[in-house]
Length: 347
Image 1 (cartoon, rainbow, N blue to C red):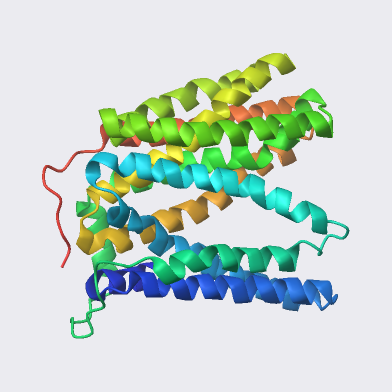
Image 2: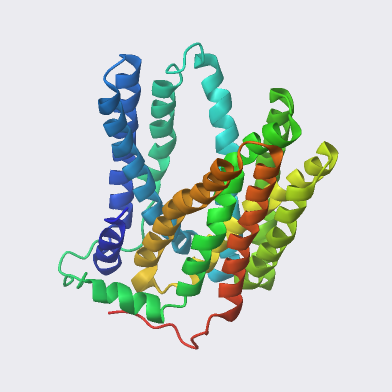
């Protein structure tokens, strides 16, 4: 993802966002396709890992150019709702992907190749029919891509407090969502069927939260909505950590899914509003980077607690409670960061 800001800055200056999105989509297909073929043929694990990394790189890069397209498909008054529809599609797509893979699940590698081709087929309408309003400017001067520009961006952009806060609270949310099924098993000794039901509730409520959160964000403002959601997380995570009954946890699970869908919806819409067009892709490149780093720091903290305290229920409860600190830090950043009155466009 280190290349993302440089490519994004070039797009902001010269255009060609859809072109790079298409390239990233094709790169994802090739990388994951090779992974599926190599895994099916029992190739050397290093070749499989290399192909997977190629696919993962292009998959993450695609979001650098996809997320900013919110400014192409919705005006400011409906930006959060448009983001919510996208998050709803993501949740439904996750469920549909699992259902699609089931008939091919006779082996672990069986679903891989059909899923890759399904991905490409579903991506084709966007690749072919979506028309970007801005055309590629082949004579625009190159942008100075030195570190100085990055420093200026983070010291002047209205998006900076959100990007920094997102790094912290997304650490917690990624860790909670990735470890939720393990938490259910270790703390409540739930069966696989019960875990499946609860995780399905999370997915379903995430879809609901995406739509409702988007609607609220358009009504009262995205930033205010984000703060309310983070306050909800600060209350919710300790309650999950101390819950003694599976029924109580089930109720909290409903709220968990709702807040997961709503926070990612409104965060994207907020950034798409405060970032000027000249910095839209550049700003979202850092959003993608913060998102990727969140898959490292939070899980490392969670794993470190389990490593130090062991695999007893108290260790998992402690890890869940500690995630509150990350969310709280993000909330404090949004509440206390000095606001700039006028967005500054970096040229």
